[in-house]
Length: 253
View 1 (cartoon, rainbow, N blue to C red):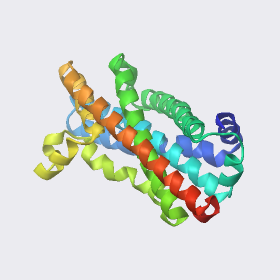
View 2 (view 1 turned 135 degrees about the vertical axis):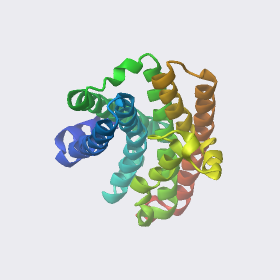
View 3 (view 1 turned 30 degrees about the horizontal axis):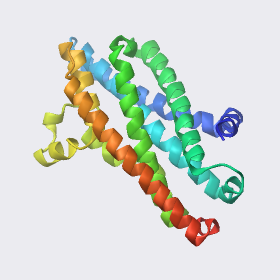
View 4 (view 1 turned 90 degrees about the vertical axis):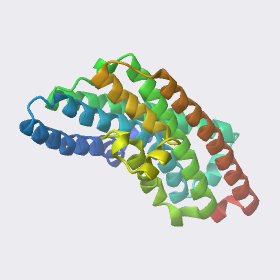
């Protein structure tokens, strides 16, 4: 299953463009914006780093989600779900292949974005190493459980709700504090942010950037929330798949 998707990715221009186009566009928009801010306050180099690194890191979570959800949608669009499951492939193997695929494509997109960020704006996000590995891991986990929940919804309600695959993830972004500190949000939004794992990641990335330190307890909270949501997401999509089997796989289309 993994090789199938990788071969398809290598030979599909639209898939390759999708993997690298959006992060490039975001980097151009936010990069130019940060350069404008820097022209107003010449000592605001850290602002540029915060915005560019935010774009690159958020793309990790986004790619983790979109690659899982879109892989399912492509099987539904091509009416291929039945063909997959008449083979000895198990549900767990199918899910594992989608998660591994999201890891590969997230790393490729992250690497590309890091290179573009350095070439255009001299932002070396690798300077956050070794904490960068923790940030990436937590953001990938967020992408996985979002992808599982969205895929479960699509399995239950079919392709008529397919727009959720590329829209639902953005509901999380305002509460993730990607480009701004949490304290600028309204009180109710700050309360919501406490149950959003990505908010802890971006807050601590800023803490590391501006103060040179990390509150590992916040990263631990993010990890626990991700694990809980990941387990719940797996149960949800497995339950959705069982419902599909009861109705017949063809009913999904």
